[in-house]
Amino acid sequence: MSENNLGDHISHRFDEELEAVRNQVLKMGGLVERQVASGISALIEHDHTLARVVARSDVKINALEVSIDEQCTQIIARRQPTASDLRLIISVIKTITDLERIGDEAEKLGEYALRVENEGIRARHYEQLQHLGDHVLKMLRDSLNCFAKMDVEMALLTIASDKRIDDEFESVSRNLITHMMEDPREIASVLHVTWCARALERIGDHAKNICEYVVYLVKGKDVRHISLEQVAEEVDIELDIDIEDGDK
Image (cartoon, rainbow, N blue to C red):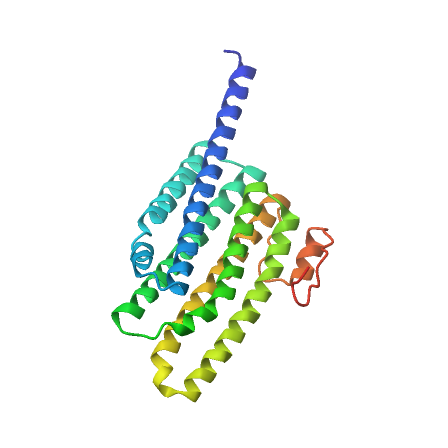
C-alpha cells in the first residue's frame, strides 16, 4: 500500500469512528426521549406500572454514557483530532453528559409518580403538567434533531423555545402556590407536583445546552451565557422569531 493510499485509509477509518460515535449519541438520545415521554405519561395517567419501569430504567442510559465517553477518550488518544473533528468529540462528550442528566430527571418523574401510590398523595394536580410536559418533550426532540442534522438555525429556534418553558413553569408554580394557600391539606400533593414541574424545566435547560453544543460544533463559537440576539449575531443568522418572547 502506497503512502497516499495508507493516508486515505487512515482518514476513512477515522471518519467511520467519528460517525459511529455520533450514531451512538443519537441512540442514547432516543432512549432518553422515550424515558422522558414515559415519565410524563406515568405522571399524567397515574400509571404506576409504567412509573416503576421509568424509575428503574436508567441503567442503559448510564451504560451508554460510559461507553461513548470511553470511545471519545480512545479517539483523542489515538487520532489526536484537530479543528472540526476535535469540536465534534468535545460536543459529543458534553451532549452525553446532558443526556444522562435528562435521564436522571426522567427517573425522578417515575419516582414521584410512585409516591402518589405509595404515600396516598392526591393525583389530580398532576394534570397541570400536561402542557408543560408536551413543550419539554418537543424541545428535547427538536434538540436531538438539531444534533442529527447539524442544523444551526433550528438549534437557535429551539434555544428560543426555552423561554416559553420557563414562563410556563413559573405559571404552574404560581398556580400551585395558590392551591397550597387556599387549602393547607393539599401541601404534600402540591409540593410533589412542584418538584415534577422543576424536573421538566431542567430537562428543557439540558435540551437547550445540546443546541448550544450544535452551534459550537458547526460554527466554532461558544454561545453559552449570552443572549439569543447576540448568538444570532455571532453566527450571522437572521432568525424569524421575536427574540423577546421566543415565539416564531
